[in-house]
Amino acid sequence: MRGELDYDLHPVKEVNSLTLSTEGRLSPKYSFGVGIVRFSERQTRYLLSVNKKEGAYRFGVSTNYSPDQGFGASLTFSVGLSRDPHSGRWFTQARSVASSGAASARVFLDSNANGVMEPGEAPLPCVGFLVGRAGPVTETDQNGIAFLTNLSSHQDIKLNLSPGTLDDPLWVAGRKGVCLVPRPGKVALIDFPVLVTSEIVGTVYRHEDSIKRAAAGIELELIDSERGQVMKRVTSAYDGFYYVSEIPPGRYILQVSPEQCSLLKLAVPTSRKLELTAEGDILDGVDFLLEPLGVPVDSRPEAYETE
Image: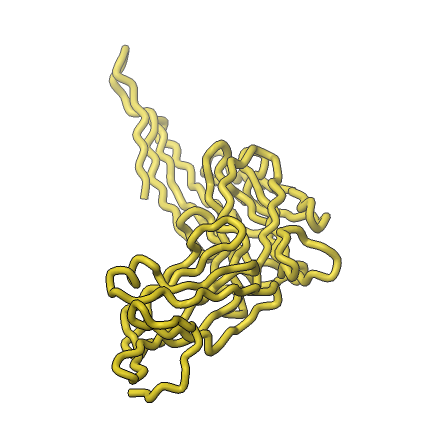
């Protein structure tokens, strides 16, 4: 609801016009407006409008009627036109595109983990994006392309894949996110590789008094062989079981934490050198046996009596 009063204070105090109007929605795409204007000359004008502000184009009809001047009407039509450089397709929308930015995001399964889409690598459809803190706003088409429009220009925007829209639980985004500053009327080209990750599963045992027991609370470290950095840390459960998930392709070293072994006065078991492929590997039975200091160490459990 809206009210508007137009009046003069000098040289004569008088009301020139009084306007009352209301606006609302007919549907998610259509809105309406109804109003009445009363002039000081005791003339009355009635207003009615219907507008389409969402969808492929913008359209509006405005009419007015007064007993003295009769009917009047106006029509408006506009369309925002933009082109996706990735696919070459043209898109239309109701909102203007000249003052906002856009991005063309392509998602593909990176089978060789090099971050570049090469012949034979499959595009991924139905993958959603997170723009800032908003929920998935656009999904990729059959060519793995999502055309994101109406991005606020000259402002930092964080663009991420929505993990819940990836079909396979072993798939993860090869890029943690992209920060871009949209420019008016420009389209940013962005590739989002998706990697097939691997898993490592095993059990940690502890040898005490000739009995092999499950070792709980033991920390294991997954180290990137090339960079020498700890990529993941996990702790064994009450039954000694551990699980390392979402490991990108590469060469790694899996070891029991040397610091914890020192605190517990245990010998550090032999570490495992692993090479995980881009096809996704599930390594099961990668077990470790912890021995007291001074006992020969072997990371493969022997045929001890188990408790």
